[in-house]
Structure formats: C-alpha cells, structure tokens
Amino acid sequence: MQLYERASTVPTHSYQRQDWQGGYESLKTEYDYWIDDIEGQIPPELQGTLFRNGPGLLDVNGNAIHHPFDGDGMISAIAFHNGRAHFRNRFVRTAAFVEEQQAGKILYRGVFGTQKPGGWLANAFDLRLKNIANTNVVYWGGKLLALWEAADPHRLDPATLETLGKDSLNGVLADGEAFAAHPRIDPRCNQDDGAPCMVNFSIKPGLSSTITIFELDPAGNVIRQHAHNVPGFAFIHDFAITENYCIFFQNPIAFNPIPFVFGLRGAGECIKFQPNQPTRIVVIPRHKSRQMQILETQSGFVFHHANAFEQGEEIFIDSICYESFPEVEAGSDFKQVDFDALQPGQMWRFHVNLQQQTVLRALIEPRCCEFPTMHPEKVGRPCRYLYMGAAHANTGNAPLQAILKADLETGHRQLWSAAPRGFVSEPIFVERPHGEGEDDGWILALVYDATHHRSDVVILDARNFEQGAIARLHLKHHIPYGLHGSFTPELFIPAY
Image (tube, rainbow, N blue to C red; front, top):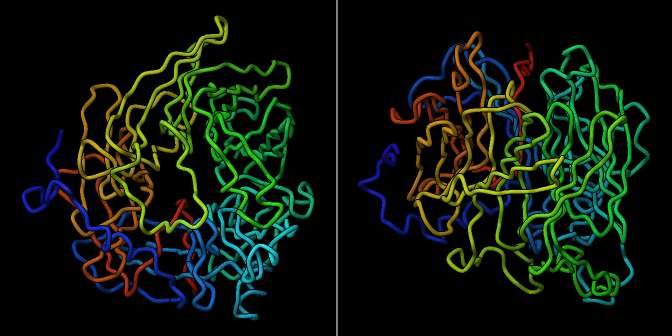
C-alpha cells in the first residue's frame, strides 16, 4: 500500500471533532468567480463541468435543523476550461425553500427529525414532505436535474444554476412523484443497439413496496418503465445495474409511523434496524421477458453500491455495507457523533447465483470507506479500479479524510490523505480524453480545510496518488459537506 501523504505529520487519531464540525456550517452567500488561488496546475486537457449537490443551509434564520439530510439543496458548479476554473453556487429554489426564506422560520418538518417550532402540537398530523432537492445533480438529455429521492426533480439552468421549476420527465412523473437520487448511466445498452441510457428508480414504501424502473435515452425521454411489488417495507437509497438487471438491497428495518403522525419524531427517526432479519437482494430484470428474483443474505445495511456485473447466471455486487443502520435519535446532536462507538462502512462483494439461489459474500476493503466511484465506461461491467472516500487510519471508524484507490485484481491500494485538518467528499472519476487504460484520468473532490475554514477542489492523477495532488484550487469560502454529484464534458461558463 502507498504511504499516506504527509504521513509523518499526522497523529494516529487523525482528526479533531471541532475541525470536522466546521464543515457543517451554513453557506448563505451565492458566489460567481474565477478561481485564482491555485497550488499546482490544472491539467489543460481537463475540460467540462463538475456539479455537486448537498445541504447548503443547516439552519433557517438561525434555527438549526436536526440533521443535515434535512438541509436545503445547494448546487456548486466548477467549470474547467484551458487550464482555468470557474466557481458558481446557487440554492435550488424549491417552493418550500422560498416560503421559509420569506417567512424567516421553519415551516416544514424534515424527514430526519427537523420539527416546526411549537412542539408536538404544532407538528402532529402534518405529513407534508418538503422537497429539498439536496442529494444529487446530473446533466442528462440537455437538462440539469437536482434530485431528492422522495419527490420529483427540479430542473436548473446549467450555466447560471437558476431554478427553472420541477421537471416531470416530459409528462411521465405526476406532481410530487418520486424519482430517486442515484441514477446509473449504462454506457452501452444492449436494448438500444449500444447507445447509452440512464437507469433510475422510484420507491413507494408500505406493507408491500413498489419499485418502478425508468430508462431514459440520451435525449432524456423515458423509453422503458415497469413496476414491481416486493413484500415488506423498503427503505432503499441506491441500486446497482448490470447489462441485464437492476439490483436492490432491501435492508432489514421496521417503520413505526405513529410517533411521526403524532408530531413526536421525524419519519427517519421511526426506523429501527432488525438485526435478526436477513437482508434481501432483489434482482429485477431490465428485460420484461425475465422474472424478478429475491434472495437472502446476512443482516446488514447498505446505503451505496460501487458496481455490479454478470458472469453467466452469476452476479457480483460490490457494496459499502454497515453492520447496522445508524439510527437517528430524537433530541440528539449530529455534530456530537461518537465515531469510535460506531461500526465503519466497509466494501463487501456479494456473489449471487441465480440458478442455485445462493448468496456468498466476502470483505474486499476493511478500511472505513464510503462514496465509491469508478470509470464510467465500466458501469455494469467488470472493473479493476474503484475509488472512494476513506478514513485516514486503516482500522476503526472516523470521518472521511482520504481518497482510496483499490485495485481489485492485485489487491494493491493507494491512499491520498488530507489529514489531520482536511475532510473529503465523494470523489468523481473523470476520464482523460483519448485515455489509455481504465485508470487514465483524474479524481476530483471537494476537501474541507479546517485550518482556513474553506474548501479546496483537489485534482489527483487517478493512476498514481503517490505524487500527491496535481492541483489544489482554494475557494474563497467553505462548502458544507455535500452528498453526490457528477461531471459532464459540456462546458457551462457564462459567455461561453
């Protein structure tokens, strides 16, 4: 394994909680500027736009929200052109965001425990969902869409980030209908003569849950849509695809809505992990001629998948798995989380045999890790390299301070670390134009620098972390810890 960057200066316990907490302050200013404070050099071949989404407001007029997942979505765009970079950020002007900003107070309950002022009486029987558009952002079919899995997307102007309104996918979605925040891009769809397509889903949970699959062509039209019922309550954030299947992990949880209905808790606080129940793997064919299958494996909780691929009647899924669901407690303070008391997320490989109806699993990355990414041409196919946010130390649980490159063929690992005072976001792989090899490209990530209370855009050579960062673009401010994002080779800078 490669040595940590600046390893000799980093203590074993690689972070201070107070440093980590600084990344959870609201950013209330919307910026628009060329980035001039740069260490190193931006590769001139790096052309296009990195879009990021995440909760930009952690309070409403000074009234703190209970959990960052309840924060209003803020889009950041970093456009790379001829060795320079431009930054812009704007909040998604959802109807609820506009209402609360005008009122200067919290008007909506949050899924993860944020309550309106006034106690349980003010919150009882108010079951409205606030579409916060804070989870992902993707450019597809000529549209920039901000996604939140429990409702419909918001469309933005990709150059200015102005909110254009909610988007129904050309009339496919009803008002408020869900469209998940983890679309997968199939680079060569075998149902469309090798053309790429975007695959996504929606969940209608209940005693029996409905999973709907959507497939969109490069023009953004829904060309395939089919729904499937699965027994039990389904709390699913992400999924994986292969050339012929969509794969979902139905985590073993129970949902008791009574405290939510009576205004005592948020919906997310009513979820309880069931450690004695198995995790179900739901395999849904992308071709209607095949049948859905449900298999069982050991209890665990999966937020994110890295990739999946087929070998004959066997499917392999690489996923970040937790021993249990990190439950959100009423009255708790997320900034005071005790990392040492929690089990880390780790990368596991699940081996599914559809004919024999068996599931085997093996640990392939024991280090605490999250937010996996890979070369986009390898989605749904066997891949050699995975990249992910990781803890600085190789054991235990901790905030993400490093970016890990895993070679799944040789077992070799490379690690770039921003410890002790840096904290990383989801890495994004960008392929080099006319690149040679699966790892020929760059890793882009936002890194919160607690020393200066600002964020950096870090560029790494995806082939070799040992040389350190190619460039660190110092922003004029911090960006609150985000969730997901994407890169497009399309260039979106005003006046271009």
